[in-house]
Length: 427
Ligand code: TXA
Ligand code: MG
Image (tube, rainbow, N blue to C red; front, side, top):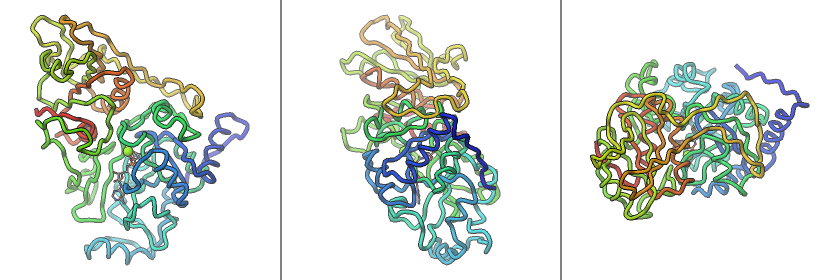
């Protein structure tokens, strides 16, 4: 099950790829690379100085463990040793895990690995005794997160480097996750040397993190693989949600600046309307703007722009037609533009059109981004939309939330939006 890759060393793209792999092996400055979820900021997971380079570049506190990326199951099992069985018992408080002598991966994960790897799923494994992983990767925990990404460039890079790659999302700490190379360049300009540009990410939200070492198994972070998909696997029928669903904070007042650790947040305050909350009226929008001039709106399934005389600039009048979708995804053209250093101008790989809609009352300017009705499209575009509105210097961002009870990746989208939001309007 090892990944076979062939590299033509005379090809420019291949040279760039090889150079990035060399940097991962020997440099302490991390390398940004695409995955199918979001761009990652990678470093050799076995070298402490290299891993510390990630925290430095992101300016992120070192108390959050990192996901370790592998190119193949063989590379992962090489890192684990069968002698870890005792360690697992200690970790699970006696709850027995089915471990085979010849398979260092707990059997509970086998159906998931078969079904979802390579792909947007991270599994929590016991860190073996005398682990090769740098302690900075696990942040002191006895476990680590492992994932085989589905992006070919990522797989080739890890395979060529020949080492497990620790990688968080490649954004500056607190900012929305990067789903295109230019997002990484914008955040980390001057802090890193290399970004592998693989075009826009397919999934757009991070991997689902699951813990099968406890009973019942838990979803620690919703992501690209849905709860419904997990429940279709043997041993995972009863998987529980182990993350805090912030929907209960709906109806909250604006929080004081600095009160909560910001995450996925653009500069402008985000007002999230939970599904069913209805669309804001002009008066409400004026309220959120508080005398300022520019309002960004991110629409999904229902809101439509209706600059009528009824005082309701945005109204809920049915799903948006495909033709109105203004975030378009260009087809990634193979491995074109493989490597861009942050000194070169990154190619825009996603086109987002902002419509300036002159409000009848003309009291504020409205920048409208429509992500379309499909959950996959919303997931793909949501971080880019937050970033785009920030770039256009809006004073507040109103987001139309979606229903997350359906067990799809909508849960991941709403999880991220609730963390980004200053104000959450109940549905
Ligand atoms: O899609 C993704 O997962 C992206 C791409 C780059 O692969 N990576 C990513 O990494 O999102 P990061 O560092 O932003 O998120 C890591 C997540 C956090 O929620 C962290 O708490 C959890 O994984 N995690 C990592 N190791 C863990 C462990 N040993 N136990 C519990 N949670 C862990
Ligand atoms: Mg992150």
